[in-house]
Length: 223
View 1: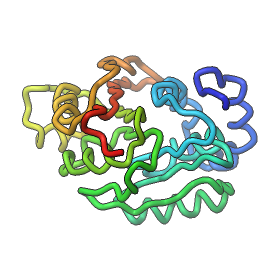
View 2: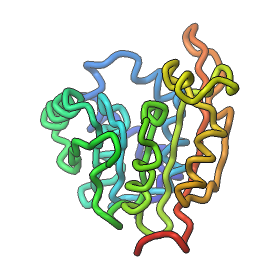
View 3: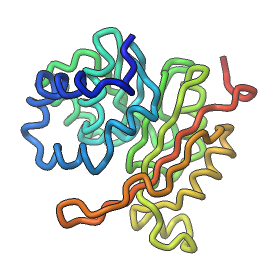
View 4: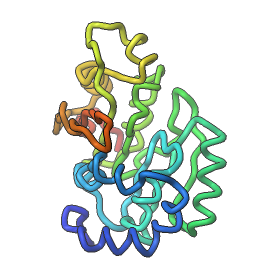
């Protein structure tokens, strides 16, 4: 099994052989790989070839197409989204790029539609702040995670943490402390906290994201 933490050469090869056709049609992909710290996100997920990984709020498939070659033919990326138009776009992308290990899951606002004890890691990038039924979603994700599996959440920091949760969501931001409280209430243990995961100027834009890495408490996980 090849661990992702030592996959720099594999990453470059996979990108050129598998991802290039999917990426060519979309702009700023290379720049986003850099400022979004994609490799660090994947390392935080602690995944390896053959794993089953959920990309929740998959959107246009930015992370889905990057996870697919890394997990290999025995692995699987479950691309989850509540937006049916996003799912249709992902379906076209998967077909055009021959991503045979990608499964598409139309979810509900309060249910990720993931089978219990089925995934080795889950990823939510710049989507958690959109989840009004966040506790129900976390409960669904927790029951889907296998023992020791990780949930990685990356999102935009609140400009003003004193604002209400609803006000933050409307600005497409959310305070890291609120999400920590959500995770703990849902029975997760936070194992890594990076409030300044991304913080810098890239191509004239200020980019700021935090990252949390959590795993279900063993005493509360369904086996």
